[in-house]
Image (cartoon, rainbow, N blue to C red; front, side, top):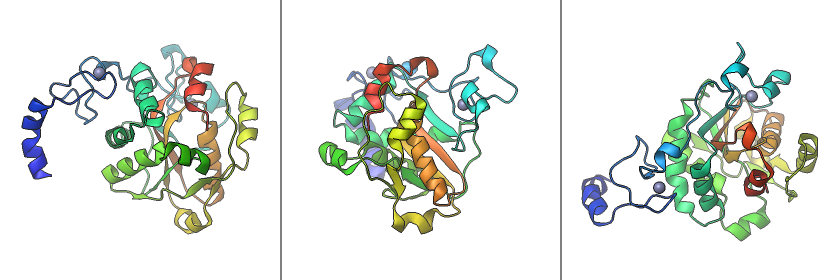
Length: 264
Ligand SMILES: [Zn+2]
Ligand SMILES: [Zn+2]
């Protein structure tokens, strides 16, 4: 590690790192993080700002901001989860990174992305969980075979290592292949996911009474994470907070996005 650090300037000079978003050369560090985005892409990675819903981190227009700082949905019905910590707001740059990670086989990118999520976690307006267990959103095994890896599990591994928190990568299981959630309303989404995600019997003991950090690559409508949170709470989890790489703002929850990211 020390040798690697010592050699880094030489290696960077001989082989300048490539931006994982556009492939351009990265000269020097663009941020305090090791995402290594280039000078063009880094400023375009939208970081969650204020005002935003304090529970689900949906960006709010300044005139929408209530004293409780909740979005319409969370104000109407308190969510099942105990807060969402998003590392970025979904946009052109995060879309590129997430699609490369999920569908482009760029699984090595999960390391810096997961560490970035961990470093951004404390910036969210949620109470820091106590000695939590980190658990990724599961993939159905047929999809796992096809893709070869679960992108959320890879993000969870890097996230947990950075935080020095325990991880249970197989605590949740997707026991039923769910149809695409494209174009479905929230009730239909809930129905499509009903009983699809369960807590592995072996993990019950670890989950009971414990704070959980649920890891997902991107949170759109929250139907999938809601199904995970419901299973975890049923198994006795204390608080369940969600950490995701990108949070999709309301105005972008369009059909194209669902096609990108909420197919199971
Ligand atoms: Zn770039
Ligand atoms: Zn909200």
